[in-house]
Length: 126
Image (cartoon, rainbow, N blue to C red):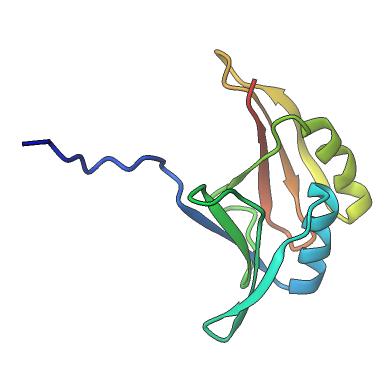
């Protein structure tokens, strides 16, 4: 009989970035990622979904209370980390931690502060 595992395929399944000003946050992320987000309503609240592949890890913007001290989500910036970082300040955000190389071929990261006051990570695979 095949053995089943309780270990998930990925550690991250979905993420939500809280927004004090939903429209401003939507403009910011569309500007730095240079990609449109799908806006819809879920449970009577606005939701903007980041582009992602079917069955891939997804996430979105939701109304809520932003935080600099909570969990950090990392958006995939593979192949465009420098470009994404270069767009942050012009879109109204801040660079908190510049591009930093991780150990042992784990890629590179940067931390930004979005227009809502959230610390968000950017990650690029090596």
